[in-house]
Amino acid sequence: MKTKAEQKDILIEEEEEEINAQINAETRNETPKSRHEILQELQGFGINVGALGSMSMEALEELLIGVRAMVSAHANQNKRGRPKSNSGLIPIFSNSDKKIVHRLMDSTGNVSSLVLSRELDIPLTTVQRRKNRLEANLIEINYSLNVEKVGWRMATLFVSTSEGKIDFVGKRILETDDMVSSVTRMIGENTIDMKVDVVFRTNKELLSLIDRVKSMEGIKNVFWSESMGLIGKSGKCYHKIIDSLGADE
Image 1 (cartoon, one colour):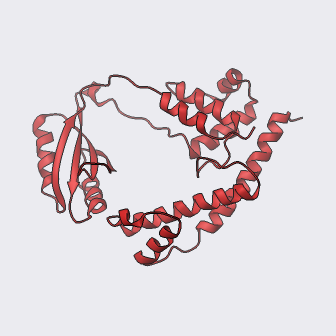
Image 2: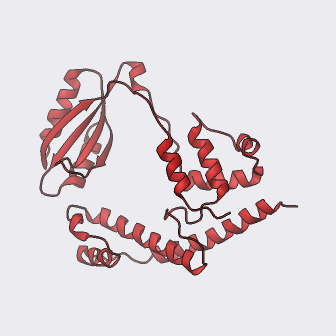
Image 3: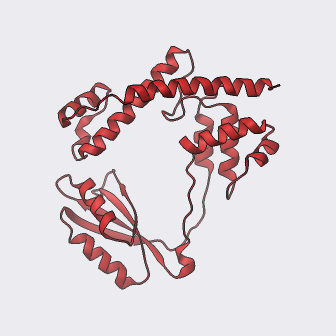
């Protein structure tokens, strides 16, 4: 015999599956083939397309698919009289979800469903369903290497590009150098277009990498800074975000 809490969670998940099925069906529609058509549809969603001039066709297509999914999610929530969610990926966010995410964010490693069930007083089957769903859509789980422990160092390159070649240059940096761990597009008051996180062992290796990046087509300038040690971490911002999400229980 299922408890009321379990029955309610099951009903919520059934409705989520129905919503997601509709979203997937709608977002499978063929993306317009021309750049003009994509920008025109994005503009129809209220997006300032003037800021998208440097984006590649692939990036624009992904953006359009994502916007369509978010619009569909909100439309389906409104049809059911449910409160709007702050996330296109998690259209329904329950109090059980909040409790689980708060506990996971406070942990230093993986927490089993059994431990969560006991600590939060939530049925084990509910925790298992919710945890799997959250890990698939909201919480990122990854392992990282503490490179300092094995004599390596970390630095960040701040790169300015020319002629709207951000995606082209970023992908080329990722593909051609094994010292690069990630490339991220940037926007702000300065002229920095992306940051490149790298690992290295000696100053000579770092300077050689910077020279290689500077020599690439489309690069205007490169600045760098080295990570000298973590001062501390705080999860307060994540808890604030969790608390701001609408609950459905």
